Image (tube, rainbow, N blue to C red; front, top):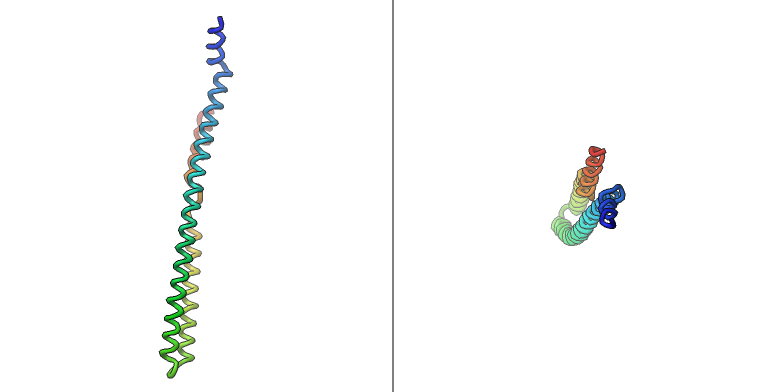
Length: 131
């Protein structure tokens, strides 16, 4: 008789609820793992981009500084004010172009955790479909 009680428990409502809760926990675990992986990838990508941006900015600033000094020194005897003005206008135009590019990138940036959100939406749709 004890075998009949075990089979009834495995096939009954409590068994189904147990299997369902196990499935839900496994589903949540995989989604959390996916979010964790995406977060780690995003963090590494951000660190790399920040490092590259700092290096690029420093090297670019040195190049612009010496190019500016070259232009000003070259025209010092003939048109020093025009040279200083031209260098200043160049920097203003460059700053506006960089600002426009930054705004464009911010508008077209993909959403973080897109894969996780997509999977959660698919899970929700599947659950609504089964109900």
